[in-house]
View 1 (cartoon, helix red, strand yellow):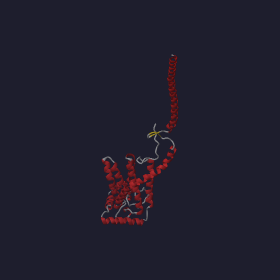
View 2 (cartoon, rainbow, N blue to C red; view 1 turned 90 degrees about the vertical axis):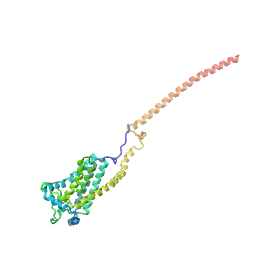
View 3 (tube, one colour; view 1 turned 90 degrees about the horizontal axis):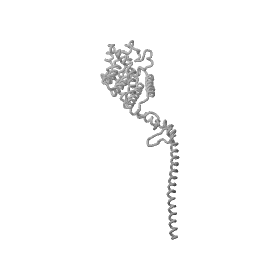
View 4 (tube, helix red, strand yellow; view 1 turned 120 degrees about the horizontal axis):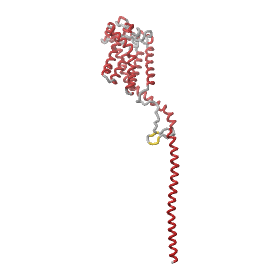
Length: 339
């Protein structure tokens, strides 16, 4: 029965294994969280950056966060759900959609979207490091912003330190506002749902979710409008770099694959692999083939000897009458001589 020797490693188009994907995503997320902590920078520098952004928006009349924050702080029916959305959806919906893509979509689609998300997150981490920015809620009260997370903190698990649970505010970087990855990740979710969702409600969610998160991050005074715009730009750059990143990882995998397959090739060296064209045999069949060939050769020699004996006997039988005929002729010749 034909037996195919397995190749080392998974084929490029095969679905990634969950036990390799989870550690990869966990490592990148841990690096993202740790990087936010390490990129705190000087508070005065972060405040200066925040004020510069706010004044630039005011000159262009695009400081949309100011009226939205007034709306959220004066209407608890809007502000409380917005705080819950800010504190949870970023960490729940994004991995849920990633798992859905891994399970339901083509491997190539999943690989691109996963790589796009990871590359964009790394770019955002670079932004936090190079440009620490004070969010509107941490500016002086004279600028008119109210921290809705602190205002409605008694309704949820968060305290006054962004969306961190009470008592864990020291584990978050409150000056990582530029770019807004809340908006960036929401845009990623929207694109994934739009491209791969099938129902009308999925399309509605694909458009509505990024827009809603953009309003939420500004209304809760966690981000400026330009932070949200920078989050969109970050995802755009990540989408452009996702393809080259995939090709680079595939080239590295291809270079490493012959090293992994070398032991298999050395074990199979000198062993006849093919019986016929494109037909590989198992080890047990290879053991039987020499014995079968030996028996066939013995049988051929035995049959050949028998055939040669039969032909010799036939030749002798035919030769006897000929001898008799010669004798008869000689006998006929003797009387002729006598006559």
